[in-house]
Image 1 (tube, rainbow, N blue to C red):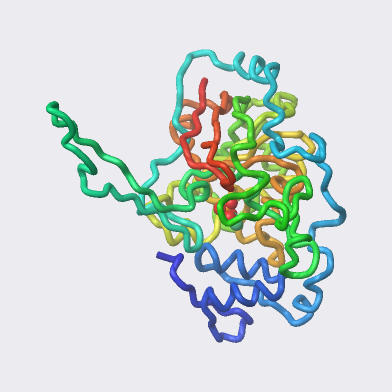
Image 2: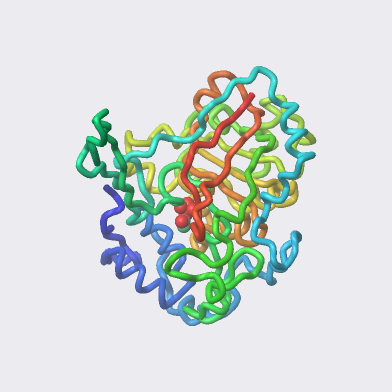
Length: 365
Ligand code: UVW
């Protein structure tokens, strides 16, 4: 598996270093994020970390020009874009249900699925059966024990405590900021986040628009290939969806074809991915959408075309704007039925203090 320690050519000199060395280096220089991104999810070429970059590590991070808090939902808000889901929004979304068909758009969770970095997924049934027989009726039962990053493996829904930005000195948790400006110092706790836990989000039931990039590009997109706002507009036109159909609080999802590598070529799946870049992210913010989703592990383009940036779309959408994100979705049945607009419904598992959620989102048409 590519999430074992990777040898990478860190400075272009031909010398290699392993993932632990990179993680240590990134701990010293936040600007090493691009290298960190590359090293954590597989093997693709990494931007070298220069001395000059390391020396500017305490200046304002790239792509941050001002504080992004307080949020438009108030200084204490912990629900972000799930606030869009009002009774009026639900009634409006429900108008899209015409034939009553439900599509599962989440994947099956299993040990062989591709995982980010050193994440694990291990399920065990102790004893099997775990207990019994009980009573004269001789009842036996099974329990499972699951060890995983429960909100960050497989089909995963990113909550608002997942992604933050180091604003001050490296390691200064009082300047490591998350959605609504909450700091790592305020929210961190070994037993679950004290703020921005996934349980703070409202259930989501909203209109969703599926952008079929495979149809637009004529085949599966490649790692590092960016989806721009122009691509979104072109795909909408091809799918006969007027841009005016996209309303505040809606979800937008991207079928890139990359999901066809799932458990067929995990190394390639992990090596990078096509996805949205900053230009599309800004369009999504302007449209005031509630959620992004894709058939990829991050939804955003990896590596970013700007090799100095790492997971910058995560930060733009989630951290700065409270927009939620659903990764590793599957759209094959919707595409086969040419269903590009549907109701997306998902309630994150309310695990107190968790960073994200597993579970099976559905599309209803
Ligand atoms: C990270 O955790 C950095 O990314 P993702 O949300 O794609 O798992």
